[in-house]
Length: 238
Image 1 (cartoon, rainbow, N blue to C red):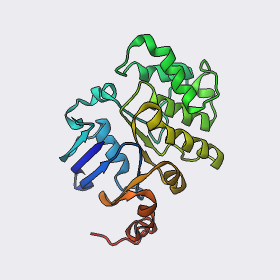
Image 2 (image 1 turned 90 degrees about the vertical axis):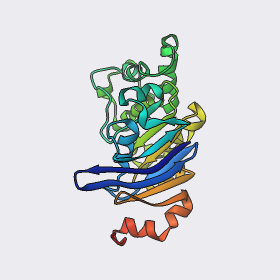
Image 3 (image 1 turned 180 degrees about the horizontal axis):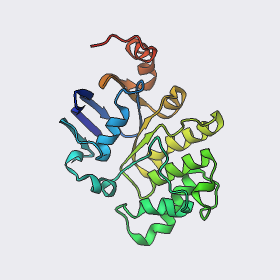
């Protein structure tokens, strides 16, 4: 469980997150909102890239914000980015193994763990193939493999399906749904594809201009009038 209380982030005179308070239950949770709503900023706080002005984040009983940023991967935070992070010159295997090195698991299981993560995503490419030779959909699966290797506690997926055709998005949805059961990690999905969010997430939280405007069962949240107005660009401004 992730418990967020009064989380506030400011960049100069801009408040990117305004006293955000929400609880993410185990499973796969959605985090949605218009562009600039604060979703990636929230991920950056959890990852340690951004220090909040105020607030707390408790993750599975630990004070996440008190963990030094470079130790959070070892604690169990993994994420994907809107821009792919795999190194094109390295093999599929080595790209995943690099992340495994920072996991809190024994090195003796590395090969099995890495190949298991690749297999879990359904990536059919040869593990020895260079990442730069992969097609777009395969590269997205590689990013997910990097995020799930080493038994993390928290997996953050930032628009993992952006630009993918429907068939590949459908496969990715199946993979995302299986993450909590497969490795026991709480998964938070950020995406603009509401069909993907609906397919993967039992619960969803919504940010708009840095403020939490709705949270609860996904189907109910997506019917919320305030959420609909926010996406149509007609929500009342503070």
